[in-house]
Image 1 (cartoon, helix red, strand yellow):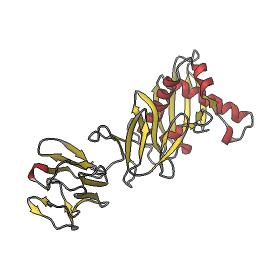
Image 2 (cartoon, helix red, strand yellow; image 1 turned 30 degrees about the vertical axis):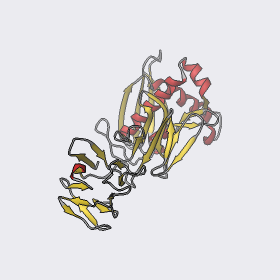
Image 3 (cartoon, rainbow, N blue to C red; image 1 turned 30 degrees about the horizontal axis):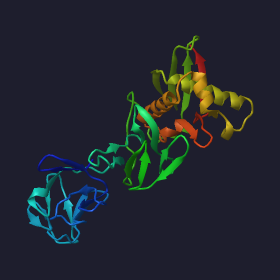
Image 4 (cartoon, rainbow, N blue to C red; image 1 turned 45 degrees about the vertical axis):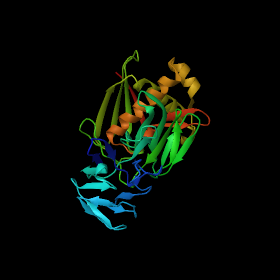
Length: 308
């Protein structure tokens, strides 16, 4: 993604609207008297980056040449820009498009990039909250008790820390696993086959779609997914409508697995992360949640169980 490097070595990863200045609203905040509150703007146009001076007192230079206030100048990799002084000279070292990210406000230079439309907070090993993109393109933060809608530059709290959400209007990243890419294929178009040993010590999952097959192997987190699949198949067999099929209460699910809620959260994230790696759209939907009632279920009814 787009990135600036300061002459002293610091980096600033570019957001789609990258304000430079002393203001607390600035993404690249430079607390120097010769830098104006809103000094300049670096912006992604959809195909390239451009630089605009916002009427700063001490001006903005591009490759040692002053630019006119309000004039948008195209940027290329290797271009050097100075904000108010040569001491604030930054080079565009990466001119690729911006990416969706979450920026910790206590460490603004260290963004967390969202891969495959899903991100765990505060970390993948402690996924208390999950940032994800829904089918309509809207972004949300999922918590145990509620789901919060996110908009560009929204500030939100997670585990006692504040973050800023930044998302350009771009297509989701592509990714592949096992050499097979299922990108842009809705979860409803795939079939999950569970191959279970008689002692249930080994649970393998195979993802199938129109002749394509991806073996996910035997993973520890496959077992909770198997239990959710069994519940959904059982409810469907009893004649329950699809909207109501498969839901289990988190507390009961935790007891049946004999684990902690934190362990279930980690398994849910690992399952979602695995499907994101396949390129399946809406990977968060492989495990659906109802935060208010603390229920969850497997997000597809196209399931099959086999004994191995």
